[in-house]
Every structure is written in structure tokens, then in C-alpha cells.
Length: 490
Image (cartoon, rainbow, N blue to C red; front, top):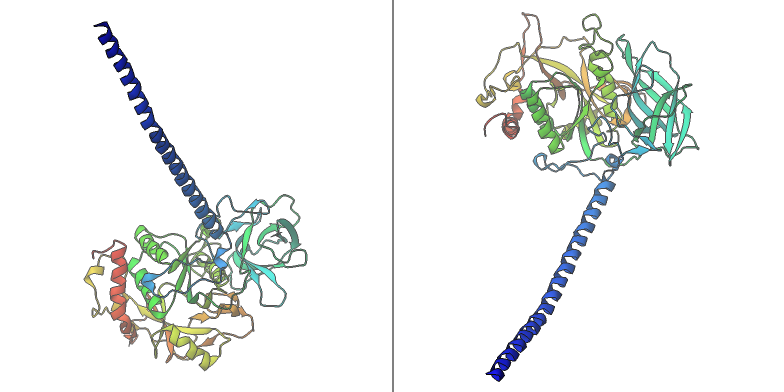
């Protein structure tokens, strides 16, 4: 019995030992597998970390402040497949706080006050067209204020200060403020400036912000054939007219529309967001009314204020310069104006003909023709789905007020921007070659101006349904945008 008990105890002890050994032998491969998995997971985490760092570095390098001047930008192959191209302006009032030049914050306008002066800087650009380079800054001046200015330039991390010169444009319409051009010299001490600040001469103190200098490169090919500059969007809410204009611009051949926007209603903003995402529209936040009391018209006695018509003229000049080496042509006109060819359908076909007819080194004037909303409405292309959209269907108005012969009629222009020195509402104040713009024959093209317009009751209006030649393409295009923006049902 004792032996039997001892034997049983011995077998039990051995069995326990055997089981423990067997368990340990199984544990070793398990621990090895666990360790291998831990190493694998660590490797995956490290790999993901390095991928994130790499993407971040790539994005950071692409976001460099001077990216808009990339000469490798592509043209738009199709409006509805538009890539989002970089543009010469940025759409925010200031650059990110991290953007610095010579240790100072960079601001990208478009309206920057100069110290204690009543002077406002809009945009700065390198001027290449006169042998010796200089920096040109579009600005707004209080014309009665006598100022002396300095240019402080950032070059390779150091600052260089030089005296500036300026000229106030003549088209101020006697308002207190006027558009001005500030000229900064380029000298051997600073041959390649990247940023500039305009300061009051004789005032001590450090520069508080720099503005980037655009157009530092002069590519020979341009991403856009036609760019349209819309000088002032103020209290805008006629959504239908906005979409009709945009789609007509596109059908005519424009690839970029630049809008200097002060404010608009929420439905208009939906439309602008749509076109901005497509890359077709660039919005410049036009904040001049925060600084200056702008007029709503061009006559002081009828529209009081300090600056002509919402700051239209400085905006037009500022639009021409950034697109000088981005667009083959720029058109300077308003949202309710359409320059329509009469013998061909697009600007792409029209401009080569004009250059043969008139010359390639002039701008082209297109005579204004009013199509008043007070005239009889024609319902041939009326669209029920548009009835609740704010605005007027321009297809319903095909009667124009005849222009009086042998009298001056206003116009808007399409021009090679590299010919422009100073732009104004109707044409150019000065050009590089000194040649004036030329008036295009009404048999070739004219400007169709759709607006509320009062005319004498005995006027014999002229029926002109040329806009209907675009109706087949225009109507579905407008409806598609309104549907995409959630303003009408699909």
C-alpha cells in the first residue's frame, strides 16, 4: 500500500513536471510569434509615419507663396472637367501667419494701409518691359495728401531701402481718392527681391509686413487664352444673370473670370463657390470700403463718396498685372456686358481676325449697345424652372436702343495685357507702345449690355436676336449650374 501510494505520488509529480515542460515548450514558439508580430506592427507604424512626413513635406513645398507663377500650368481642356489651377492672387486677405520674409510676416492684400498715411497698397508686380527692371505697386492715394515713400525690399534674407516714386492716375473723376502707381527701383544691392513694403519716408520703425512681388518670371506660354476682369461685385443678388453671364463667357472662350467681390447674398455665394471649385472663377476679397467711403456711381454730385464707383479703377489695374504673364488676352468689362462676335461664335475665332484687320499691338474697343429690361419681353426662350431665381432672363430681351450716329458711344475692351500700363473703365490711359485702342466695326462685333435702362418713349428699338444663336447651348448649361448649386430641382 505504501509502495503503491509512493508510486502514485511519483507518477503524479512526474506527470506535473512533464505537463509543465510541455507547456513551456509550447510557450517558447508562442512568445517568438508574439515578438515577431510586435516587430511587424512597429515596422508598419514607422512606415506609415514616414509616408505622412513625406506627403506633408511635398504639400508644404507646393504651397510656397510664389507657386502661382509656375509656368507649367495647364490650360482647361473642358469646363466640366476643369482642374483647379493656381492663380496669381490668393483668395484670403492675409497669408498664413507662418509665411515670413526677412523675419517679417507676409500679407497678400488686397488692401494694405501704409502706416499713418491715407495710402493703400493693392498689389506689387515686377516690371520687365522697359530694359531695367522695377517694381510697380498698384495703390490708392488721398490726392490732396503730399507724401514721400520708401520701398523696403527683401533680398536673400536681408532688407534694402530705396526711395520710391509715384504717379496718380488722371481718371479719378474729382473724387478725393484716386488710383496710383508706385515705382520702386531695382539696383545692384538687390537684384532679385521677393517681397516689398511701401513705407512713409522719414518715419522710423521696423517694417511690420511684406507683400509678395508677383510676375518675377516671364513665361512665353500662358495657361489661359482669355481672362475676364470684373471690377466690382457689390450687394450682388441677381443669381440668374450671374449664371447666364458665366456660361456665356465660357461659350465665348473665356477660361478664367476674376471677380473683385465686396459682398453678395447667400444664393450668389453658392454660385460663386460652384465656379470657384471648377477653377473657372477667382474671387478677390475687395475690402476697400473698410477704409474708404466708396461711391456707388461715377458722378460726385449724384453719388457721394471718397472713391469712384466701389474702387472700380484700382481693381481693374490690379487685375491686369497679375494676369500679364498668365493670359494671352484680358477683357475688361462688367457682369451685365457681353462682347459678341457677329460673323463667328467665339473670341478664339474673333481675335485672330481682329489682329489681321487692325494690328496685333493694339487693344480692341467694342461699342456699347443697351438692351433695356424696360423693353418688351419675348417669351421664345422663357424657362419655367428659372422663374423663382432672382434676376432677369436676358434671352427675353432682344430689342436694343439704337446708338446715335456721329456721337461718341462708350465701349469696353479686350487687350493683350502686356501692352497695358494704366487701365481705366473705358479703355487704357497709357500703353507700352503709346498706341491707342481701336474701335471694332459693329459689323464684326459689338457689346450687348443687359440692364434696366430708361430711353425716350418715342425711340424705335432695333430687333437684335443674335443672343439666341447661343440659346441651345446656354439654356441647359445654366440649368445644370442652378441644379448643381441646389437652387432648382433636377
